[in-house]
Length: 97
Image (cartoon, rainbow, N blue to C red):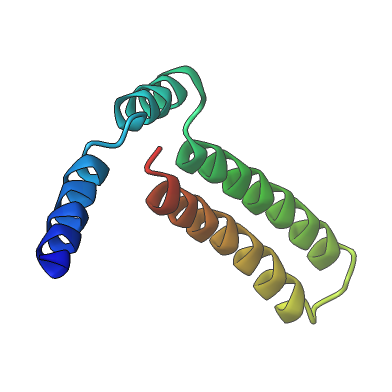
């Protein structure tokens, strides 16, 4: 009888745990956040564009000043922009915004 009552008690606890309060509130907060704020992915694209343009200007300036070994500069600016694009996609995937 003790095992049956313990089993029944555990089943009742599982049923009450299935209906957690706050899930709809969290969904509403997520929707409000997505509607009100600039998208993280869009922000990362804007920053990547700024990195790309700044890098292009600096590399062009160095090339015109006679510095012809700019391979590391090109790679650094390219990967900075690429990292920003990937980080935006990563944050979009994690937070779903």
